Image (cartoon, rainbow, N blue to C red; front, side):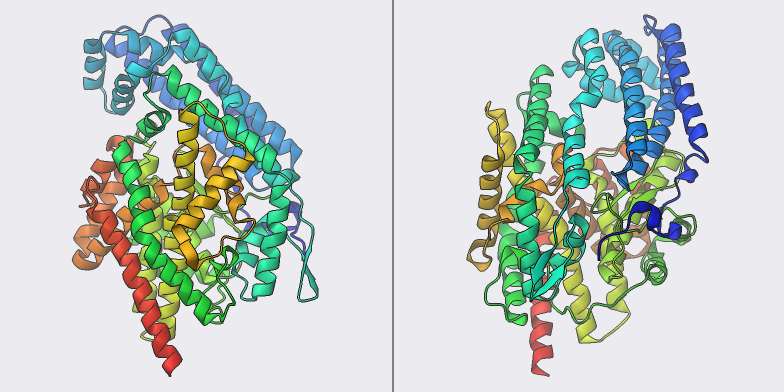
Length: 601
């Protein structure tokens, strides 16, 4: 059945953007306010940022500007995410992006002038403020990489152009790419991006699953060159920016914003590739055995150990699961979960032109807005719990911190979300002694939570590292090169246990993460922290929960090492990652043992 158009889905399954602005006119009023404030700030502060009090007054106004632009951008951008076919919303969003670019260019003098001030003046400005302290410290940190004022202004004005590759990618993927039906077992099936990723990849019938993969891959291949061109433009831009700002290499440039070392980045990729692969190959062999497959292919990796034991869960039922599962985090947290349902923070609908996957946006001073596509599966409960982890994080962070201190490093940002998945796992396993149920829960967390973050995204990161190495050496990448890199990464990880069939190499085309710098590896980094903290909560109870709440509220006042330390975890060593990999291995051991016991009954 073909997906509905956006105007055909039930309103109760959609998010309510009136929680940001009650009307479009109210949004436009804030856009006009931002434009007026920009002119006033130029008049009041340009050429005058040479004393602590003036600097802080300017940054007080800049905080208000960031708030306005965040709300306007969220209201317009989120409307596009649920319907890329809506040209009115697309035009409106692009208009606001242009406004934001103009304002950024006009106000680029702020950082330039502060950088040119005597360091003693900046230090005194820091001493006199709390709300602007983190911003000023970052200005000092970025000072060695700051360009001339007019160059910074030009680059700010070009920001919409610099981000164009991601827009082109999304347009090709979500607006232009139309899928023809495919046939399996003599029956015709409809196909679409979300239908494939949400349904057919998990279909227990290998004929349907593999035919869908083949048809899906054939359509991707038709767009491989334009997608590669967009991606190459993106990574070349990253390299150019790194060179302009005086970084030794593109990796240092991208990791600079995350406030982590190259050692931490490489460790995440190298250790998982080396140490986790044997465990996941064993899991793949188990899937092949229990499903009686002739061979294990890349198209089969997401099937369930026990597909007949997959409880159907309605949206309303999911509320009870999540409220109970996350109750350990306290009444304030579960009240937020209830609010998310009651006030329509979540866009559950499945419709044409909607973004795939899931995400959570939390505009400062408002609630959160969560996008996913509901398929009545327990997997969707885990996805929603994950996104609510982001919501809970930024509700605490936004309430406790200045807007300047809410830009949490991407290295850490997936920890609160994956933590919720682990808490849901602990809750579910505590509700029943039934072996089949326990196997299903453990298999769910391995095949969804850990597979998604420690395999899918980690292999994306390994692929991405090779791409940036080529670019850093002065080369460029085309579709053929990208596919060859991706195929080798997959073959190295899965070895002889999984056949990397034609089409698997095209998975580089399926993720928007590649347009967000070195983001993919951070999923496993966040889940490493979450795994260790969840084990601490299991051991120590409320004291560990209270530490975790402090972490959620800390925002970007601490770097990733500091945030993890506040939670009682030392991520400067291999130990947390090795322990997390061992945890995954022990889960797979138990799944295999439970399978043997169930088969023997």
